[in-house]
Length: 179
Image (cartoon, rainbow, N blue to C red; front, side):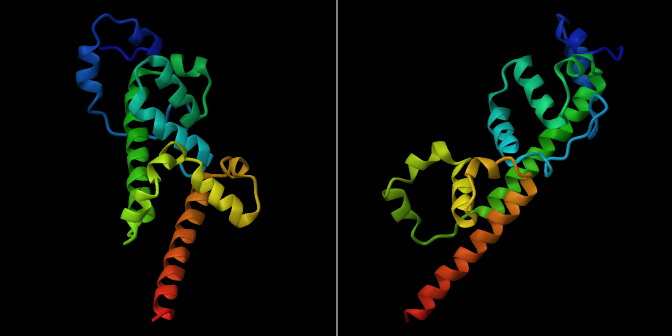
């Protein structure tokens, strides 16, 4: 087995030999001489990549994902080593899985009025799930929501978690003060 380029790999008729070995590589945060810092990536890019991951059905989608995450060119992607690709792919998937799990844990709502929210038509908001948090922060800080989407993911996520915690405390305070 040779350490071929991605371009050469995609032209192989049978990739089973490569796939069976390289799928077991340890994750590595390095690809084409670049590393990935998911927390420094723009919030909008992180959300776009999360939406793109389950829909990957072509090498163009994979290329686009790597270009965004590792900030590389198309040419650098195709010239990269297949060993680097498989190790970086495992790192990238683990990083996104971690982000998703953290978001689900910290931003999950424990509302007792959830059924009322659903009855009011919460499903209508699902297509906007990536931008609604930016809209809320934009209102709070008097900024254009899509400008906020260009800010680093870690900053936006921190503000979302803080805002959620504050809203929960204020809601509980209102319940207590009415008694």
